[in-house]
Amino acid sequence: MVVILKPEVKYGEANEIRRNIMERYSEISDIKIVPGEEVVTLQIMGGAERSIDPLDIEGIEGVDRYIPVLEPYRLASRKYHPSNTIVKVGNLEIGNEFVVMAGPCSVDDTIEENAKHLVDAGVKIIRGGAVKPRGSPYSWQGMGEPGYEKLAKAGQLVNLPVISEITDKTMVEMVSNYVDIFQVGARHMENVPLLLELAKTDKPVLLKNKDSATAEQWLLHAEYLLAGKGNKNGEYEGGNPNVILCHRGDVSFDRPEFRNTFDVAKITYAKQNSHLPVCGDPSHGTGKRCRVVPLGLSAIAAGADSLLVEAHYDPSIAKTDGAQTIDMKELSYLVRKGEEIYNSIHGPI
Ligand code: PEP
Ligand code: MN
Image 1: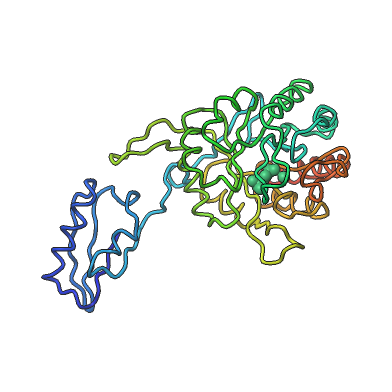
Image 2: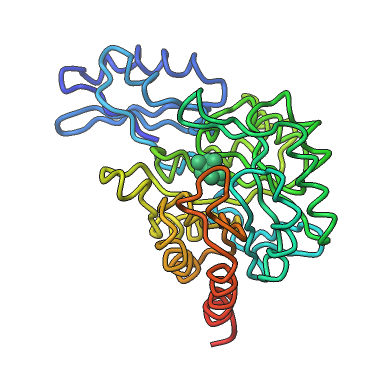
């Protein structure tokens, strides 16, 4: 990494800035002062780059800019882990076969009936939210623990694994009793205490992007799950390797027609820059039932390994997110066509 000094800082004055930076980071082995035509630069040696926050260095008098050289994430990066990671859930291998996770937005009394329809539609994992972080405190917030219990029972009934959202670090043990995959929702992508608690387990975690996060921030928060709590010597406490990245759309400037902007380019970014399996959520990604199937298929064409879809045998009675909930006919079509596209991309050429 390189620090560019302001033009008025002369070569002889750079030593003070060098000393200031050396004292902050024990990992720095040396800093070379490089004279230049117009400005002096500092070249930092040693493994400190990922612990440096550019704003800390740019706060030092005489520093103009800090330029990092590496991506801020390492464990999530394909550069250091070229082969695809496969996340095992029961007999399923996410990252190695096409997997549709589907079910109602929220768990209610229809979940068992839904489970029977979902299995017939070819779904391999059942979804359903028991805690529903909503836009308004006056909206229904989900069933809580009885909802997780109902979802787990529905999964057992049809012999399929289940996925459900978790919103707080204090819930990990309880939720772990009921789900096969923890879902971390868009609102909680940056809930670092939750990520660090999930990093202590080895149960798969599906990490959605926050609607206003950059692709890099999304992967950097997956890094929290993979690394656990890092310390200054670059050692980690814990770390959960079973992470699935889920794109659920970005903030839209064109509401209410588009609840979010489903950006398939982010799916290609996640596949190319990371080795983790990638999931697309065209339901939250679009907000409208009529767009779920086409955008779901586009996600697979872009390289997604799996889909997370809101579906109900009767979307009219879905308790939440009905407008983006597809019925079983549409879901069966999505599973079948999705499988075809997936196989044509991942099969032999
Ligand atoms: C959900 O999956 O029901 C959900 C709340 O999604 P998101 O976190 O993407 O808004
Ligand atoms: Mn929903």
